[in-house]
Every structure is written in C-alpha cells, then in structure tokens.
Length: 628
Image 1 (cartoon, helix red, strand yellow):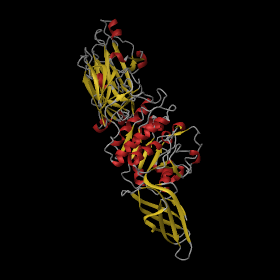
Image 2: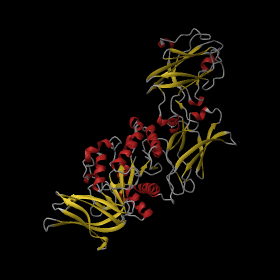
Image 3: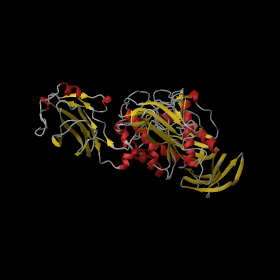
Image 4: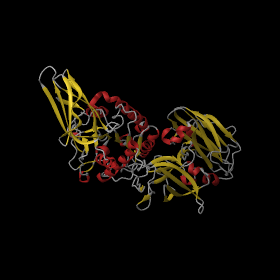
C-alpha cells in the first residue's frame, strides 16, 4: 500500500468541529477489499480503533476516512487490506501523528523568512511543519527552502545557510501555548511574488503556479486546514498594481474559501512594514497599507496585524527576533478570530480623528482615538509616527509639534490656526507615512498601532490639492472690466512662464508685489492651469479672486465677474463643469484693479463621487491631476 494524500509520518491531522479527526486518505493498493485501521497510542490500541473498517480498495486504488481520533497524540496509524479473493494482505504504518489545527503560511519573502538563523526558535515537538520537499517534521526555521521544493514554481536556489527565520514558527508555538492543541504549518510562501502571480485563475497550472502549488499541498494533506496566515503586498506597491490590490485580495480569498470548501475560513493578514529606501514610491506603500487595514470591512472573517514598528534585517525584511513578535501577533489575532478567545483583543483599530481647539494657544489639535487598545498606549522615548500632509506623494511641512498619549487616545498638537478651516481641508492624517517611517507607539501588550492614511481631518470632499504650480503670463495692458476680453488663443504672444507659489502663502497664487509696484496702472494677468482626468467626471472649478475676473475651460468661457474685489476668498465661486477623460486647460484672466488685486485661489472638486467611496478615503476614487 502507498498513501498519496492525507496521512504521513509526523503530520498533524486537522481536527473537525467535534475536536476529533475526520481525515480523508487516498492511495494505491493492488488488492481488493475493506480498509481497516489500527490506531496506537503509547503502543496500545486506542479505544474503538482496533481493526475498525475505514474504507475500501479496488482497481489499484484505495480510499479511507479516519473519524474520531481525539485531539492530541502522538499516534501510530496502521492501514491494512486483506484481499477478498486471495490470502494476500497489504498494510502501511505512519508514525508519530498528531491531531490538532493546521494552517497555510503564504505570501512573499517576509512570510518565507529572511531573518538570521541565529534568532530561530527551538523546535517544539507539538508544532509541526509540512516543508517544501513534502515531508512533515518538527517546525524549525527555515520552513521555506526553495532549493528542495517539489513544486515547479518554487524550485530555485537553496536558502543561504545563515538566513531563514520568519514568523511561522512563532505563530504555531504561540497558538500551541494559547490553545494547548498541536499545530501544523503548511509552508507555501515565495519571496518577491505579486498578487498577479497568486492569481487563483492559475490553479489549473498546478505546481507551476503559486496558487496551484498551494492548492496541491492542501490536497496532499487531506484537504483540511484551520485557516491562513498571509504576508504579501510589497511587490504590489507600484501605481498600477496598488490600485487593483483590494479587488485582487477579495478575489483571492473568495477563491481560496471556495476551493477549500470552507466559506468562513479565517485569514490573518499582515500589513506590510517598511522599506528603507527614502522617497521610493511613497504613495504606493501608503496605499497598500491602508487597503490592508480596511480589508476586514470588505471581507468577513479576516483580521489585519501591523508590522510598521518592527526592526529590519535589511532594507525590507523583518529581523528574526521581530519576526517572532509578528508571529505572536498573528497568533493572538487568530485566537480571537478562530477560537473567540475572550482574554485577548483583536488588533488595534483606528477609530476617528477630531479637531480640537487648544484652550491656551488657540491653535488646532487633533484627538485621535483607537479601538481594542490593551491597557494604554505607550512609547519608548518620544511618541513618533504621526504626520499631517497635504501631499499624498511627499511629506510636506508637518505642523505636528508634540504627541501626547492619553489612554487609548493620542493628542496631536499642531501649529495650525483654527481659522481659516481650509488649512485642515488640505491636510490628511497618517500613521506611518511613506515607505520608511519611524513608528514606536504600542499598547501595554506590545501591539503596534496600525499604519493608516490618508485620513481626512475634515469631512471628506473630493478636492484636488490647491493649484500653486501653473503658468503665468507677463503683465498685459489695461483691459478694464474684461467684458470684451477674448480667450488668448495665441499664448506665445503673452509671455507665459511656469511658476510655483510658496505654500506659506496659504495656497494663494500671490502677484501682489508685481501688481502693486505698478499701481495705479490698471493691468491684466493670465493664469493657465492644466489638469488630467483618468476618467470622465463632474467637477467644480473652485475660484477665489480679488479683481475683475474671467475664466475659460478648454477655450470656452465659463465665468465672468466684472466687480471682483478684495479680499480673495477661498472657493468664493464653484463653477460646475463636465470633464472627459484626458487633459484640460483652465485659463483665468485677472484685472489688477489699479494695483488693489493680489491674485487667485484655485482648486478642483470632483462632485460625482459616491458617499460610500468618500468615507473609505482618497485611495478609493480618482480626482483631477494637476499638471502645471
């Protein structure tokens, strides 16, 4: 007899809801007859398992189902067939088998394990692993040695002798400690892999695909697991992939549950950590982390644990010692998710951020609240990690000057005055901005705050940033109230030059120095702003001005006010327009009002974004992109 799937030496059988085994086993056998099982514990037959019938053999194959072995072990299990047509018999013995919970470990390199082996944990005989070469043994790093892998996709260079520590062993050992139940780990991760490579539609490729290899290993072990521990996302931080990440994760987990015939399979995912290359695709790293943070709102029965505070072994891989910390965080989350452990809390969640006026300084503070905090928030040294930025790609001047931890809340003290409120309209709150932030805030159980952002600090509206970079014409001769002014079709005649106005001027395109220097002469100046829309959208052109003004969109007049005067007010008028996919030009003409005019405020607000997407945040909808 030869077992193909479902029973091997040293393996962990996934227990059923009853707490006992219900394990399908298939294999090859040249005989015809009943399959019987003897289960031994301490070399003595287990009650009810002395030559009990568990299946049948015919046509060169056999199938069996061993039901009722209690959680625990170890057990020795012998399967036998006595041929009904002859005196021939066949048997197979598998030793040191446990019954407990089995977990898929999947994702990319930080699940594969790149920490130094000097940090690896001592193996525990009740925590086992199904290694890449399809054998079971005590779980010890490295769990993922691609050099010995059975599956074609995984075959590669053997892992270096000095590395290989990841979070999987600590995950299993922590669950053993929390539950007292034997644990099995099925190693399926592969470094550097993207969600495209994990696409479930590649299942038919078998071991030549990541999903197919994972599914084969699942079937090999009896098509029974308790859940999944997943760490992936670093390879999806480029702009195009990041925009598709949530949808791909929904597809992946839905397919996983369908193929595993487990519609509520619990999944704990890791929010990607740091990448120590400054200014490398900052928006992509922010986006993936925030999508992973909110995935539990899109997919039932999953939880996300953070890694933003953990130390690195190199520019992107978590150190061996902190990989153990991550494994324990994953185990605690799984204990809540899978077992409903009431002594533990789910991972910390961002709750809200509320503007508060400082009673002494009159400036605006932010009170940030969190759920599921164990004890109170704390930090070694000064609390770090929060940022306020008006730019999603680069950290602009950050007005936070102090961070105070108050129980489950964080008070961020800023230099921003409460008036004008537009200052906070253009500020988004982050914890863990960019690819290499320093974050050191945890709770009393040493669990990190989740990275998040961009989170709006005022009720979310689909504003693009204020336009402070555009083309400005040379000063033109007197044009009065502009009633006869036509669109400047030949812009080359007007001396346009690119100009960026300093953000310290409160997002105001300020030409006061030039205009007032020639007062009381009445002059004219043009501002040209180009935007790109990735899709058709309804937009308000939001304009503030302090002199006679006229505006054109793509050469068509959309606004005229001959009586414009001081002061310029943010969003004084909102001009509704339809913008198709592609590039557009807004031209604004401003009369100097005999030197009294200073300039304009300009920004764009998309008005057709559903409220549900507005609440989810900036990563979930598109806005006009400022070009110049």
